[in-house]
Length: 415
Image (cartoon, rainbow, N blue to C red; front, side, top):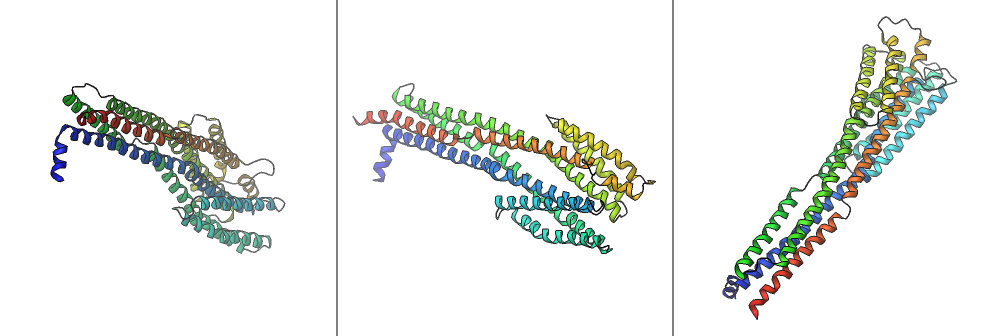
């Protein structure tokens, strides 16, 4: 049997049979690999749109909500008794917002890389709220220990809660960016295999020409055309998808990231102003000066890459007004009275403080560019929709065409 098989494969009809098997199997193998590769890219972009993007936004909201809560908890003890309940309610709403964002993060990453940080942050909330509420209660009764409780709450926020929230955001933004780059990159393995299949088809046609004197085999030519079409219709959407993904990454890295950092520094600076009056420490004024300079720098950095600068310019203008207003506060020879300082660092009775206006404009800009980034990711995914099935069908057609083209030539030897 083995000798007969070897003899058969040594004859022209045996070699043509091997070529038919090689061409059809290589086309089917390329179709299968292409199907798996494209499905993997689609899954990555689906994950980026439906999970990682939402998780990244939630992480950003977690930081902002806790930073707002820290600043508001301190402002509440500086204003008069009529306005204090309003700020206390704002603090509680900030905590509820943080918990809601933590819930969203937990739902989107149950057991994932963010789960431990989310659990840790959630566990810290009761202790943080207890410190603040106890400090307020002690302050209403005139106990000096109130300052101690508020100091512990602020330390908990700045030493544990906010660093964890920032790390959560940094981790998620890095994973989202990596997933987008992987999904939108060209698959060189696919193109190399495609070229190999085209090479097999070309070699098969040349072999057939030498043995049968037929210059072209319709089936092999059709298979080559279908393979080329499959590679072409895959390369173009991948290039366009990659462009959308790159645009999404650029907007996050060059606009959203510096604006988010500016907003975070702004909320920290807002709280630092209040700490200057409640429990000042050496270096607070210099730190506040550096914070205000950093906010201006980050806004300017984002503005260089932004396409719609209206909100960013408004934030930059309010940041300049904030720095001008605080110049008196942080001056080493400042002679401001306590009531004057309180009125400077706390929200006005009517309207919004300069710090709040900076935050409002930054939030609007961040929201707009985050939405634009998410839309670009969705567009990248849309360009890959159904591409896996199209590629697999084209390669299946190539396999059938190659087999159909070689079968008559093989049958000629059995007449």
